[in-house]
Length: 384
Length: 124
Image 1 (cartoon, rainbow over the protein chains, first blue to last red):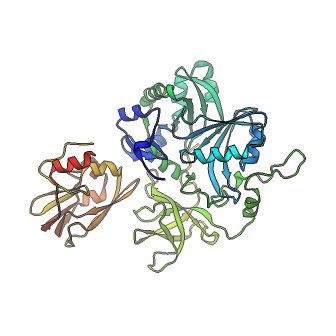
Image 2 (spheres, rainbow over the protein chains, first blue to last red; image 1 turned 30 degrees about the vertical axis):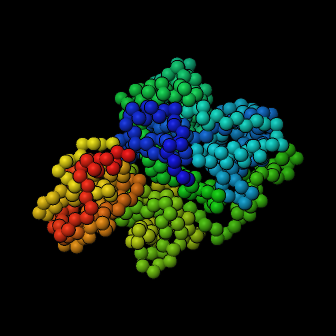
């Protein structure tokens, strides 16, 4: 992705970020906050209390119409027609060859209404692919990416903070909302779509509101949350939190050369989708993904813990051992020092014979070979 | 962008600072420390090592990225800041003071900027 800050889209919360002294960064065509104070402090606040994130760069695509569900079943790898009203589903849009075009969260908002949240860098390609795939269906795509703001409250105190601002009639709706569900609720006087989803490994909520209402909602959430330990948190903390939680990032763990199965997410591919007559339902990528589901010897995503202090990073070579002549056996997709665990962590693709927990490997950290060990994902799981 | 640069230091375009002395002291500027984010690891040369102006003499690793440390001078390393190696966050909290990195017996210097020149360069 080329970075051209002068042409970046500004978040509806841009003035709030500037007022808070955020370090801004160019990300997927947007100027977004990288951090407000300290990456580690923001990360730890989300684990211990709560963080407030601006995710307005994410794409919001509405699919509506009598054949919205059938169209999405044909366009995506998941079984969207089976999603219960009010619930959400993590799914992917794949190419004919099974490569991932984007990973998506799809919210069912009505029998004939679905909200798709796409990664900022992929909104355009997802929209174009959906328009093509839905052409034969009685369904309409509406792109509300630029008029919708998305704010996330994530952390163990998120429910307490949010319910404190929620209209009395809606408090129980928010409180009893299960993970991966959404409902309309009035928060600080704003009509919001409130979803119990997130990307941090913590409990938390994502709030969709019209862009013009976002600044007031943001300030209200900050004011209500600060006494409970909430801090504004930037993209840097978001990345280290999702890495600890073992969640894939498009462009790192997922891309057009990767299938969902490679990333350990084969469960999102619903090969048992059937048409009305009971025959296998066709969807884009089906043949390739069926073959991949049964392939042995394919690469697989693993977790790595660093045994030294230096962290592996995206793109570094994974090598067989710390010996200077040890061969390359994979590539690191994401890596960072883990603020929660206190040692470096990483994810990487390897062949199945190297994927067993406890396997000792090494990472080439700028010419020096640092020992790493294969571990189960996620690195961090929140206490329940 | 911070403009409160100590006027008695020299600076480089690579965001190091140099304080003249016998030996001289080297660190990185607040601008560099802020840009890196939380610093978690320092790789510094060894005491006694001969270093060369403009050459890479170490690495500074933050939660988000890795940056190379360039030497503003040629000379011999006489001391490294072990407190900063043990707790690199001091480079973020006090880059011009307790977060210094090296002391060097200088034999020659590379291209250096005044505080005003460095501020002008980082302002853009």
